[in-house]
Every structure is written in C-alpha cells, then in structure tokens.
Amino acid sequence: MPSIEVTERGPRWDRNWVIVNDEGDFLSQRQFPVLSRVEVQLDTDILKFGNAESSYVSVDVNARGSKKSFKVWGNECWGEEISPDASAWFSNFLKSKCYFLSSANLFSRKSSQKRTHSSSLVYADGYPFLLVSQASLDLLNNKLEEKKLQVKMSRFRPNIVVTGLEQHEEDNLDEFKIGEVKFKAVKNCPRCVIVNVNQEDSTHQNEVLKTLASYRKGEQGIEFGQNLVHLNQGIINIGDNLITSEL
Image (cartoon, rainbow, N blue to C red; front, top):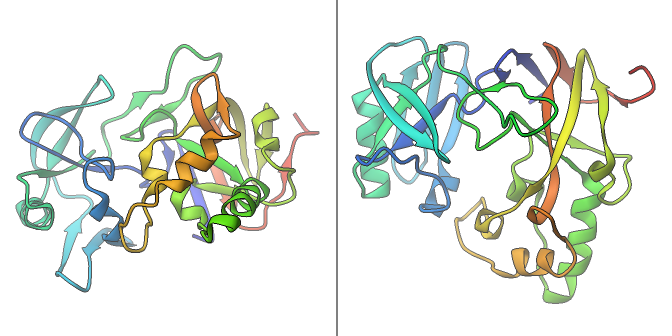
C-alpha cells in the first residue's frame, strides 16, 4: 500500500475480519496454510476475496449481522456474521465449517497491559504493528543461500518495512516517528510455524524457522521483527523517514 491511515484501533481495516469455527476458535495459517492463497482487495466499502482456482466473493464492509463470540489467544472477542456467502466460501475452501466475521467497525481490544505502553487493536494476535528491517531479512537469506532457499518479506507479514537500519537494529528501537505517527517499540516478535509457509503456494519449508532458531533465540522464543504500539493517529507513507531525534 502506498500509505496507511493509522486510526485509534491501528491501521485502518487491518485484521478487521476473521474466520472462526463452531468451537469459537479463530482460524489462521497455523491450521490452514492454504489461507495464504486467498487474494484480497479492498475498494472503498467493498471487500473482495477469493482466488482464481475457486471463485470470488464481495462483501459490504458496512453490513451488519448476527453477533458471535470467539477467542484470540484467550482474549474474549466478538464479531458479526455479515455475509453467509462469505462463510460458505471459506467453509468450502477449507473443507471445514466456519464463519466469516466482521468487527463491524465497533469491536476493539487492548494490547498486552504487561508492557509500559498499550494501544487499541482489533483481531491481530497481540499488537497492531510489526516492523521488520530489510537488512534483517537479507541476513536470513544469506544464511539460507547455502540451502538453496530464499524467502520474501511476506513470510513475516510485517505492516511496516524499513531500510537503512542495520541487521536486527529494530531490536533496539524505543520511541520514534514515521510520517505523522509516533510509535513505541514494545517487544521483539516471537515467530511460529507460519514463517515456514510459502505465501505464494502454501507449501512448507521447515528450514526457515530452523535457520532462524540457530541465531535468533531470545527471551520470547525465536525472534524476528519488533512489535509496536501507536501513540497517536495519522498517515504514514512509503518513503517516510523513521525519525527518533524529534521525540
């Protein structure tokens, strides 16, 4: 995206929808790697998703529906089933009964209160932002080269990527500004098996997490990237500088 509007609840529209099962568990690539092949487009008030091998579904982001409760890592959440067609599409795609839910622009929760700073988010795992430096990915690819493997930044699903930092210099960030928005770095991001999923074809490549484990084990586990909270609202753009001196 050329720019992101940072709202009270984090990046506008980011992680505002979720699929859940009958038991009230949210579903992700951890259980269904094939989800990496779901293409998504957001055009004003219409969300379109699907893929060329299956079909496409369009959803009105302002629609309302019946409320359902579920949990994200133990946190009580709710959403509204705004499109039975969308629920049916995912159920068919995953071959497992599930429900497509929307936050209805109403639900939000707080990131971990264990940290010095907290902010609002919607359905993200724990924090509204993940920042990764390009140099950190380059280092990993250098280590993977001897295994004839290279990975793209999409493996790690950050919503902010920066150049100009040293390898894993994001570990040492504190407070800084990008564009109009002030951020606070709160914790290194522990990684799970999703980083082994090739986002283009849903295949597994176990060497990615195994290689990371050889040099990035920390207090939180195998760490790659920095979780952030936002301290205000505004716009950030591709090309904006990361500035620490003004804070």
